[in-house]
Image (tube, rainbow, N blue to C red; front, top):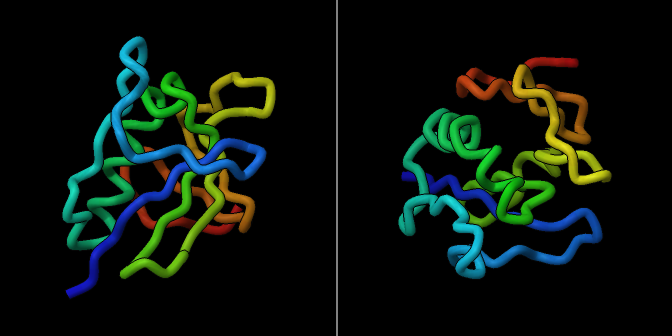
Length: 106
């Protein structure tokens, strides 16, 4: 069975640790064991992206069994604004819907 997880980073490539925020801003936690299917991982990011941005996350990478399969997915603009909630855009040209739908061509 595959395990799907998200890895978080800043725009400069610096990783954002999976631990909660610094006490002032709490980051949502994905399940320690990961997600059993891709749609569960995508649904979680769709529900959590605003709080992730508020805690300092700029981009996310989706991994399957530790191998990058999607990303970087920009959650915030480079000016630290928030990307439209209608669709999150990855640099690969696919759109990931916050509702957890499968990515579709841009």
